[in-house]
Length: 431
Image (cartoon, rainbow, N blue to C red; front, side, top):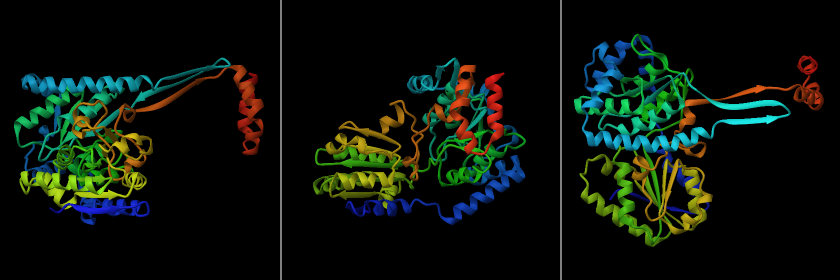
């Protein structure tokens, strides 16, 4: 079948996770290629974007076709099939509900000794959002990135996505960008799009921050330009780990694995079995499912070349493996795992129970499906409205508070050897 089987113990859990993760590292030729593409865009500007669109996407663009306005997006929205528009609006509403509740929690007002302290979210001036394209269009990702940016109040939201050969795909993306609240659409993909957002061209305006998922080239380009512009986090090829035991609906678990593997041949998808019976069950279901898939489909290719099934000798070993792997998506069907959710921290998102579903997370739940990969789930969660703002404290001190600060902080200021700090505080307190 091609799916690897790995035995996990408490002692080798971290090492096993590292070995599985090692195959996802970008090869040196990608690193070198991205450096050259970024240099070309900085040097040639629009000409490089046009040339690379033809080279990589097979689409010839004029300079005027590089960027679409929201007027063009509105026309695409008005002409789109009503059922598609309804589905996108329903997703938008769920995102609005979730992100608005989070946004309201960001404002903090404190009053003490007459001092007024407020911490409020201040929107970034401009954000560039990258949505993958190529073999598929992802209007859902367009919405996942545009809606929180609109809630945050970002003045200029630029969507960058590969140019489409198919006019219907192109118009679907435009319609989604209109619903999501974008300001403009840049028809450029891969590393060249990231470079254009970071440094600008004659046609493309640079942004303050770049967010969004993509392939290895996009991931590497974000790393390269992070020297000059803010980026969100590593959001590369999809990752999924399902935790199973003998009570698991194995066909459903196998379908969830195939669904995430469907994104591209370089996804990282696996199962973690808690006993030999569940190992056999998930392997059998995967084997049956692979027989149904076209041999050279992205899902089949990914599962055969990169898929894995691990068997842990207990929950302690299983949780250590999960923490070390830090997968983007974690589905917990196993009853033991459902009872031990507090043990799990290093994942992008968790769905648990007999009805656990990654596809539900992708399209309906509410939290963004733009999630950390490549181990980044050990230090942060998925995209939210927080990624579009900075938290800005504002303070209006009272005389009472200034005098107390002078008395209580005097020795600390002197210990740090900053007499002018003390002098300034004294003057403010006594003025």
